[in-house]
Image (cartoon, rainbow, N blue to C red):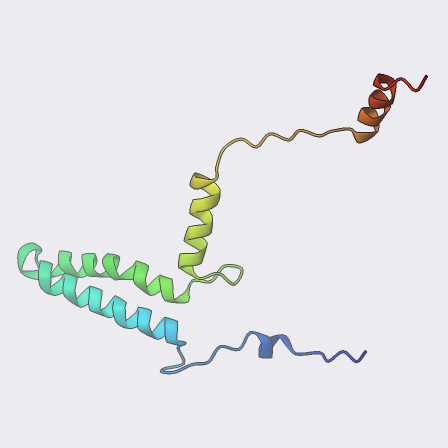
Length: 115
């Protein structure tokens, strides 16, 4: 059988749509800008421009990170769900009980008297 080697760069290629960003990265960046603008316009008159600008950066950062996050091929949502399942939903002690089949078979032969 003939094996064709594919370069790693080709296998990890992601299509870009705008400014060199993938679709996911682009929409998360647009959403982050929208969140930042909404926080700034909503809290600017109440808290002042400087405080509102810091809050808009803090509010938009998680959305911006969500677009670029990748861990072992998982997106942020997939990683968060896997973490939640492993640490909270399915967490707890797991008891390992082994059974020695050889010992069981030997005792079964003794229990069944072949006389």
